Length: 306
Ligand code: SF4
Image (cartoon, rainbow, N blue to C red; front, side, top):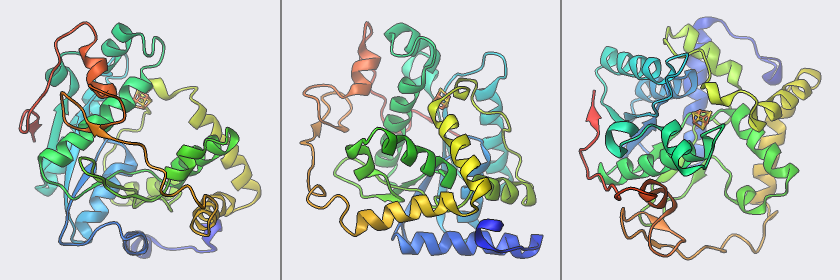
């Protein structure tokens, strides 16, 4: 690992990754061993590795898989679900499964086509749905915190994108731990300081079977383009990606956004699902689902468990 000036054998690498994760969890005060953690798992190397690490570290971590219904060609969703269920059953862990088509009546591509929110790419519909479902399960199942498998490459690419457009509101909110607010779970990213290659190495060395293929809609996205730019930079200057991200966090802590920290949008509960929203009446998710259809309000336990 040129960026860390460190070379480890398999045995020590598999000790180093959990030890670093523990340090990150403590440094950013993400959660304790007394709290219940919900890990959002996609079937990819990062989220399954995160779940594996938290189990090894002795945290109370259950999984949540959201079935998106993206199955044309690669059977991406079917394969993701199979691998998540395999991971959970091999370790005797609890996995919540929410199939969007079963609960809300349509797959993500179908909602996107109907609502015209993403004729070619359903990513905005997908992101909105995933955020809604993750919050709902965390709230309904009384989890203290929601953990996602975002790695350094993901975070640095988002940071670059937001910096190139000077998206202040997004820069203000980006970080390893986002505090909870009434109705919204605390969100944490314990892998935010690991390079993508480090997580791939961890998954392979641990024998974790994961989905190799990206979601078919990811091709050509801005975040993949930004990742490539950062990889080129990293190739020339090892450690540049980590420094870009960490120095942003330090600068923000030192007052980069001084005076903006307490700017909060007024939030009120959605009239349908109860999750906080800045819009009067229905939140963006319930408006989307309700377009031309009856509003669906699933209660706790409507998801299946594997
Ligand atoms: S790339 Fe696929 S999984 Fe990711 S947001 Fe887009 S549709 Fe969803």
